Image: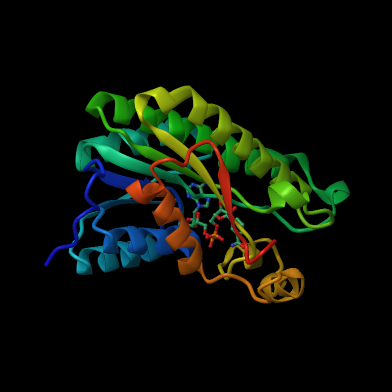
Length: 255
Ligand code: NAP
């Protein structure tokens, strides 16, 4: 039998930015298992996006693959126009796409890196949120936005990626303010802050072994699997979290 969304939840698909790999891909599958159709956004890895979409369809749900760089405003607009044309009403947005840039001390971080990280992690998430709200409002949906932050917003990540930590702190402030602004419409906005999680993001930043080293400081003694973070995101999106908004929840093994 096909999965169905939980009772009490609005209908509609969930758009996940960066759903081709890592936490986004795991979230797509967790939400599909819970009965949601998924808009799978990616930027470069079409093959990975197709694999995720295939797994969603195997679970009996619809998957819409849309390539778009969330760091480019015109592409964000196209992403949401195409999502509306293909999937119709959205129930949720997971602002998951995120990058760190090269790992290292701030003194060696270039303006280009800072700009690219803020374009993707902050401006992109804000523009996606604005488009998702417009979709919710057009369809009268009491939707949910989950912004994927990081514990780096609290630790500051000295010597690692101070600029990235600052981008996630900006996202947390955005979560708080937007949640309070749209609460009266029955729309929730939450943050989910993972700790070190076993994905490709560390290799992309130049340090594939970072989770193993970070594990020494994690009370639970190990990094997270992507599906552990995905479960927390899916819970925030679900009616089980109906009284949670304007806050960023950590999924970080005790950090
Ligand atoms: P990942 O494995 O590197 O995957 C990144 C995903 O985002 C990919 O699907 C990638 O698409 C997509 N993406 C990157 N830039 C994009 C852009 N400009 N437009 C659209 N999509 C884009 O990353 P992850 O570790 O799963 O991270 C997901 C989120 O969790 C990020 O916001 C990250 O900051 C946060 N986070 C991660 C960790 C961790 O330890 N992994 C810890 C704390 C927070 P392609 O496949 O097409 O490249």
